[in-house]
Image (spheres, rainbow, N blue to C red):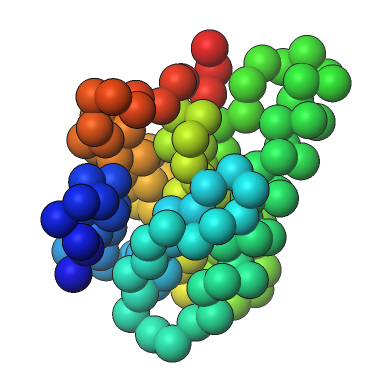
Length: 137
């Protein structure tokens, strides 16, 4: 349970719980900072989350750099896919990254839709004193 003096943690906990409740496909959801600090996580298994948070922020930074270099605008989402599933990395404004995993390769549409919705809900729920800037700004 988040501490009463950490309103961000309360937003993360509430929105990640909703995410897992609404999207059957999501197996793991993590909120991390751009420098890789794990802020929150919810999962349906027993996955390593600290290292995933660090790698997730690194992949978002790489996506940002590649798209900027190619003059394609700001990066919103990075995807990693394997035969066993896929992972999405999605900006929450410029302050955080949402990492979402599914073990079903056939759930990309659902996972992408719910990840975007969850990132938006987190961004809108953050305290007014620290609103994240849109990634595409």
